[in-house]
Image (cartoon, rainbow, N blue to C red; front, side, top):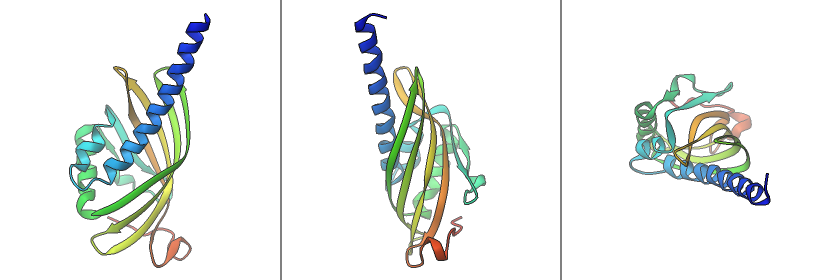
Length: 163
């Protein structure tokens, strides 16, 4: 491999990693949107993209695959959680060609059903895919550590159901 080829490969790796990080920032903004949430989230996924809630505090019935299902899933959150502020941190992204994996911690402050302040925290396990030069989410697994009322905390209420 020539020096130029090696440099281009390094540049592609750095740009790809940065694109995946930016995609997660866009995902956080889309999930916090006051309107058009479903369309905004679905636009960040591949056509066959999947979202799944996993782990002991997960919600297995909330899985969605494909843009139509993602739109329905996230649009239901507008009424369910009229306010949310997501924060993502501790990013670890590994890129291999046109695919990548990533792990991210998240914290969310939100209002449930209009009058219940909640804290939610967990970890994302993501697969990314480059499609026609654009990085998109292909499979997002969300592992909730806790969903707890603001005034009680995760020790007292480690997981509150939020249908």
